[in-house]
Image (cartoon, rainbow, N blue to C red):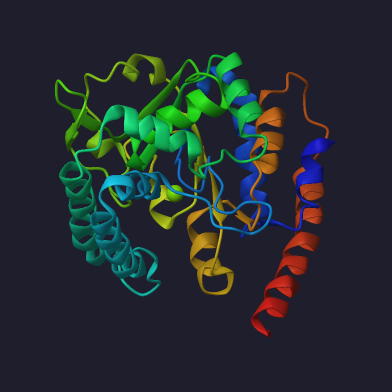
Length: 325
Ligand SMILES: [Mg+2]
């Protein structure tokens, strides 16, 4: 059974394989009609690093790159600012409440730089085409599978929505049907020059239904879809399902892209499955295939646990080996 193969991956970690298996089983039983998807974009649908280990761009980095063409001084200021605030975002000691004011400040400043640079719609599109934002390997298949099955997919991003739209157009060929981007969208004047961003501001820690508006068109589409397949890469992403009505099962998959040793415990607390240092969509795709399969189960919880236990041990060894160097 292919679902068992994912457990052989050296990249997977689970705090409680039994709970994970029960969730997957329930989602399979409830079927596609009850299923919806919520995904983060930066370093979740897109890669954190390429095959040579070089860092890829986030949507905000693309904006900074586009600014640097005509306004290198603004791009430098923005980069300086990022260094300061990213420490707060990933600080393992601060609470979310303590982090939020810093996040708001960071996002507001960053949007102001883009407005000061008077970025145009065309500059943004051109810069995306040459930037290093890559969808994860197998992401195109993953996105198309969701689309072909008529399943609603919310891409919830604290990045910049215009960049995400352009990446989908360039790398998938179009924006998949049923995919809704909830993000900070650039607002343009009559000359297609950016003069602001949409409200409310979406930052790392308010990516949930509190920023959604009841008039949003997809509300009808997600009605009654109580099971949530959630993908994220930051700790805040694990709460993107907050406020989903009558939520049934939420399967939360988190990509841990760096600082494995210090962040692993927190990620295990927040996510059902943690995918460690893997720039592909292989594991979510296997699970999705299994959930959408029409046939009945062949595996028991015991099979799943047995497969997983070996992996957790292997993972611990891997982490210890890393820590000792
Ligand atoms: Mg992200």
